[in-house]
Length: 465
Image (cartoon, rainbow, N blue to C red):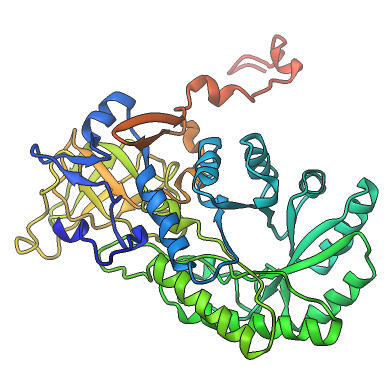
């Protein structure tokens, strides 16, 4: 387990680790996070249970800031789609981050949390009128995704007597080496304005006096492990900024290069560290803009997964065990695809351990072909959280799955009419609930029954008529 806890640089970049930075193994061989025994936490709060470690999020934000130290006019924006709730918005504010949101719900959460409006950016490829109106009325900057959105925004701004400050989302045609479902920068992406339509976008912009272009944005996708695509983005965006100045007399004040830097889900994953990522981007922006004699814009980066992913773990209780003649076995958990749909959605791979027996690993020499799969409780054959967990889990064990801070809660559902888990935040040896466990009553709270269904039935009795 020592390699799981190793520190490779003086700047801690949690996205390169499997476990939260406060993870330790107790003398009882239990997993501790923030000094708290996860086995005891599972007993106290129930399972499944999401756990978020504040120190890990703090270290991730610090790694980004330190990487950007040489670039004085910069801002780290947290990508809220990774994990959003009111407590997380307060954490964002406490850490000095800004926030990007992609829906009315995320924007409402941010506003209710008291996050400064000038640090919130609204994204989305098909924003509703309500979302745009809420952003306009609150003075939120809007990342415009298409020519038709620009037209609609201009009309809404005029109706409300507001002037919208916008960033144009550009499709740079750069593709990271990641799953095709989470690529967004390729030329045929559903997001953004392609490079050959930028001039058309600006021409339309000039005819709308209720919208002001202050920046450009690009995002190539998620779970990228290499820096080269980001350097390529910067070079392309610098060319766009030069064209905007020379052709249209527009000066870009903000340059948002997106996020998407990956995290380590397994020991084989070697993502670029947050510190190296931000440092490389800052250096490239300075170089590319100076080479083109352009004034340096404010630099924005948007890490999401890499801020919260490593901070989160999920605890489960192991239930029934099914052994097969070939040595393979299924260990059923009390959660699954409703609290973590990523394995079923795009074959995401995770690392799991037995929280109450952290040194327990399968003896691979005993049977190299035998596999222990951690399967969920839901009515789908594809509900498998870890296909080859490599742990001798037994009924009653507390199972921990690492790297679940991003997209698990965000993508969770009530599939099979099950309630979503609780989430606790750990800081300085204390744990507090930030998302209450749903109840059966929560599941039916929005249900409505038409009045005619409440009337006595006139249907014939079974077997008659």
